[in-house]
Length: 96
Image (cartoon, rainbow, N blue to C red; front, side, top):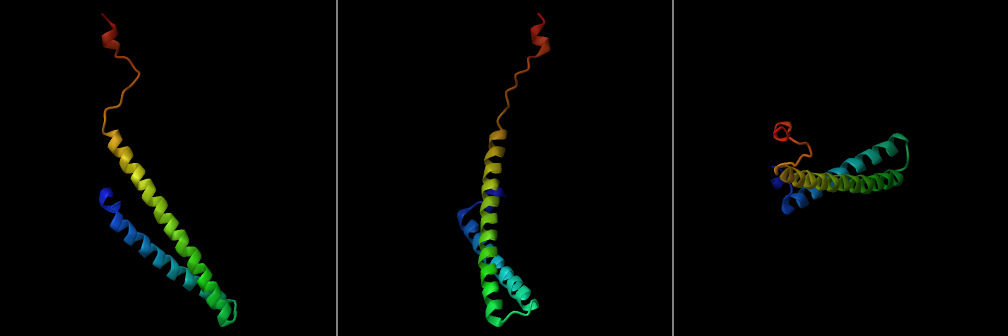
C-alpha cells in the first residue's frame, strides 16, 4: 500500500489536489472573515487571495512532509525484516 502511495504520478496528483483544496478553503475562510468584519469587497478579495496562497502552500508542505515520512517508514520497515543482532550472550552456551 505504501509503495502505491509513493508512486511519482500519484504523489503529483495528490499534491495538486491538496493545493487546490487548501487554496479553496483558504479563500473561503479569508473572504468570510473579512466579510464578517464588514470590509470592502476589494479587501475581502485581497484577504481571500492571500489566505488561499498561504493555505495552499501549507497543505502542499504538509503533503511533502507526510510523503517523506512515509518513505522513511517504508525503508525502515524493509530494513527491520533483517534479523537484529543482540549483545546478550546465551547463558546455556557459557556453561560447559
